[in-house]
Amino acid sequence: MTRTGKREYSSQYEKMTCQPIPSLILELGLPTTLSMMVTNLYNVVDTWFVGQINTSASGATGVVFGMMSILQAVGFMFGHGSGSNIARLLGAKRLRRARQFSSAAFFVSLACSMLIAALGLTFLEPLCRLLGSTETILPYAKTYAVFILLAAPAMVTGCVMNNILRYEGRAAFAMIGLVSGGVLNIFGDAVLMKGLNMGIAGAGLSTMISQYISSAILLSMYLRRKTQTVFSLRYLPFLKPPAAGTEPDGEADRAGWRLFFATTGSILLTGLPSLTRQGLSSVSTMILNARAKIFGDAAIAAMSIVARVTNLLFCVGLGIGQGYQPVSGYNYGAKKYSRVRSGFFFTLGFGTVLISLFAAAGALLAPAVSTLMRDDPAVIAIAVPAMRVQCAALVSMPMSVCANMMFQSIGLSGRATLMSSLRSGACFIPLVLVLSRVWGLPGIMYSQPISDVLSALIAVPFVIHFFRRLPREDT
Image 1 (tube, helix red, strand yellow):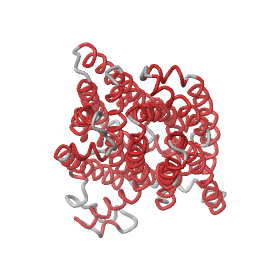
Image 2 (tube, rainbow, N blue to C red; image 1 turned 135 degrees about the vertical axis):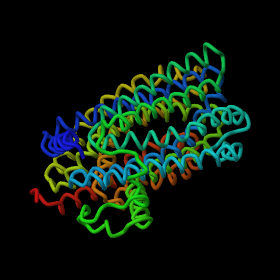
Image 3 (spheres, rainbow, N blue to C red; image 1 turned 45 degrees about the horizontal axis):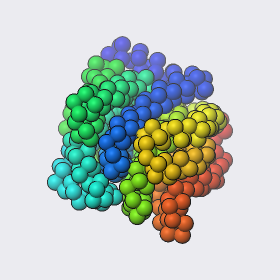
């Protein structure tokens, strides 16, 4: 490492382990929150533009949203899996090993995304039907899905780069890439859908272009050496194993492919909670659409609108929680356990207050937002009450999010995976299947809010148990 690089590394280490917790988490969390809000905002804008076509086209965005969740699941798995390891390695001052993790995550995720895109395009119609498409929604869903699958490499690697930047403590860099892509997508929708009258194909093309531009901006941060980690083939362990004596835990002895598989395995294991969370989000979307289509295209369109809007609000709490992740991982690796503890409770309190304000605004504006998304009385009649009860339940969400983020960042992947499986899986799926049969359409509308509350309640004893066992003083 150059002398300038060493100074920068030392400065970043001091910042992550010594800066006061509130200012550090806000510095990292607010850019993350903003970037996630802009990302979700262009999903909402997509829904609004597509909703101008007809109700079936609006329903197609909800169907393809499940496919996007699959791609995000892969990206977040590699991003969070590598990022958590990287944060702890940087906290332990093991820069070369951190670079091996970043390089492996980037290249393996790129290969996986290309494979997913190829399979998706080959089996496009069966995939759209599996995601919950009706006969009237299917033509729109197929058109939209083609562009999303073509954008898969950019979407997946973009998630990886974004999350590694966050775990390094460089959330502002991550924000630049994501916000740029989001703004471009909004303008692209206006030009391609309205200006060129391309319909839902314009929405898909706009998303694809903006994803590649966003990914290129994020990659430029690494190519211009703005980061401590890099993406380079020479850091892949099977190409160039670490020099003897540079790895204190003996990993230098596991050269070649053995070390590569150990690195990739650690990424996958640590990233499993993210794969679980996002993967179950995709599965739950499929099940929700399958149950909603019994009640027609209006029900699918309404629940799609509710999902997009509440995800926009959900990202407020998630963004603050992700701002805590690098703080938790870095300081856990540096054995500064009191900062892990104080960071958790600050994030929980601040996140609860912030999301409460946003949820109140969402509940109040539910009729206006629903009408804006799709001016169809049948859609609005379903969307408004569903959105309001979902907003009320979001207030409980910071507890489960903070628990999930903390466990994942410090390498407790089993507990983190359990936390990740609750909101969209272990709690939601049984609820929507049972309540939709017992209660009909209201059962579909209220399954997610009930799941949110249950997820938070289940997280509490795990958090209490963890902090009772965590050393009270730094060691």
